[in-house]
Amino acid sequence: MKSKFKADAIMQVLDIILPNHQRPLVLHEPSFAGNEWNYIKQCIDSRWVSSAGQYVNDFEERLKTFTGAKYAVAVVNGTAALHLSLLVAGVKAGDEVLLPTLTFIATANAVKYIGAIPHFVDSSEYSLGLDGAKLNQYLHDVASQKPEGCFNKNTGRRIKALIVMHTFGHSVDLDLLLRLCQEHNLILIEDAAEALGSYYKGKHVGHHGLLSIISFNGNKIITTGGGGAILTNDSLMAVKARHLSTQAKLPHPWAFNHDQTGFNYRMPNLNAALGCAQLEQLPHFIKKKRDLAQRYQQAFKSLEGIKIFHEPDYATSNYWLNVLLLDEAHMQERDHVLQLTHKNGIMTRPAWTLMHKLPMYAQCPLMDLSTAESLERRIINLPSSAFLA
Ligand SMILES: *Cc1c(COP(=O)(O)O)cnc(C)c1O
Image (cartoon, rainbow, N blue to C red):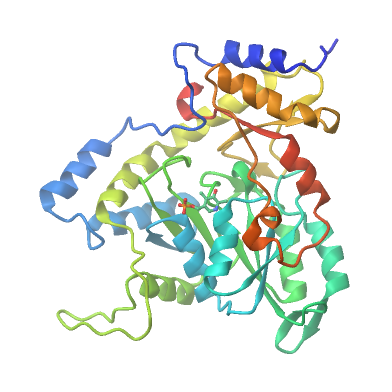
């Protein structure tokens, strides 16, 4: 027999399965149990602390090995990685870029940085990421193919790219979206900021599209303090991104020459040193986080009106943040659950406010977003640090 939905019951289950010596318990906390001190000390002892340093190259090599991507470019954060990806992909001011409305703000901001226009797409309850089938239908109605590319019949603007986001570490259905991009002549970019250590049909996410990005912010699965990376299998994209990230400086032993307006986006050595130590522990973090997800699933099995989100069949997820999903009948209880857990020192949080509801993106083109709107009101993220397992 399932018991009736009650916010108190959710609170009780959390109190039992989460270690009770630690309150408040934050949503996601990094672990530094490996070579962090050692590698950072080497940076300081060698006096190579900024971008020209061996750990930056080492970190890129290790990222390539772990993900299977041919090229990796380490940069200052995930947002900068998105900005550069859009630039090297050839997205121009006035182009439209399709992206989910259910995402972190950085995805939309990066589009805006280059003067392009976010065009918001609905999400699927199965993956929490972009709904490929629904987007396919929508594009059949609004997109028209011209020799120069895909155009929006309503706005007259070119639709140049599609950014997918692997929400909370769960991969979108990449085969479906790749096919859709081929059919409509769109560039696919993966915002895999949350998905290091996540797989789609056994292959690491982040190199199915032309370019993808990862974030190493302090709350992500591994951290460099602040940091990000671009992954790609396209050598030209990698060369262009690296060049733009280092002020577009032409290599020379002493002369300073630059062939375009570049950016100071290269990751410093200190951050990369931290990243190398963190990557060594990543398989361990993933195992712990998958164990924690299972524990949540077990613990909440008998509660009515909710479920703990489970990875899609095709995916093996890093479970970056666990999701407690309220049934539609109980979505008015969300704030009560948030309040009660916070009052008891357990830091839960709702989904991000949808992009199309924010003042700076309220005028952007969009499709029917009813699933994302429902998910936004039903998602509660639970504490998910690796050490909790
Ligand atoms: C964290 C995150 C980013 C941005 O990463 P930063 O390193 O914080 O700039 C981008 N997209 C998504 C979906 C994220 O979760």
